[in-house]
Image (cartoon, rainbow, N blue to C red):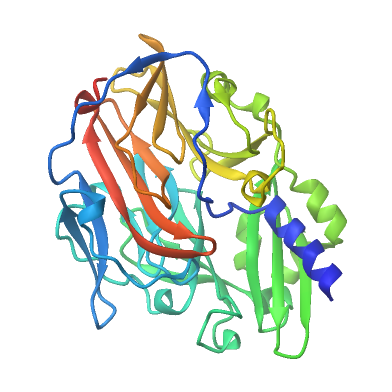
Length: 381
């Protein structure tokens, strides 16, 4: 069983948008560096959870001023878990709450739970199909207090306004056990690959499938439109492509990173609004410590300016922001430093402003979480 568990872990990590780990600083190669002035108040916002489970977005003068919270497994914590684009609109997927356009995340905003399932499941990944959003949801059999067989849905669908949510796909449609939880769902080369884990309390089973059309998952006879795969076949199909296949403007930025740990670059463009993962192997990796052997997740965005010109940006977990613009070339700026065990994760950027998610994490648990916002002019750009 141990060998099976280890193999399954390798399979899952190859084809899922993994949670970002706490990262040591990655040093970019030479690029023009822009000094950062001290940030005024109200650039920091954090998730505040009430006694009744309600979530409110509150201001803070600094991260250090945010009240400490009880750490929770990352599958159960309120945090930004994914990012997406839809016709130029940027959205954050917030675990336990739902999907919110970034423009909605203002000071003292109440974040109502968008669907009755969210408090009981983990909001894993976001997909954009035919102008609609789909959210992969699942339960963790170790951390969840609810019987995992109570919910058999693994996709929620919502409209572009992110207001109405409906269950869209059920493991019963795939003829899988009612305990099956969707651990990953990725598009690779026009095909969709999904992995499921079923834990009935006595034994654990894994299922790997391929489907040619995303909409097939939502059909009552979805089982007729899928192909069962071996763990090895699934892992081979879902191996992330090398970073040199990224769009040119982002590839140049990624090449400038002197990383001593493997990188998974989650790339968002107008053609890949829900993200595509690329891999960049470590340079000068010693593997002396466990931390050095843990890969780092990095977010990267290619976006259009108001004049139609393309820009590209990569944000490293330590707050290093790399920009590539047609007007200024490659520039580097440092977002405000975070305390120990805090990292930046997903971000959205425009001609004039940046919004970056951050979280406090130790191993598999998350404490405080929120976002940082600033005008690019305040960063010296």
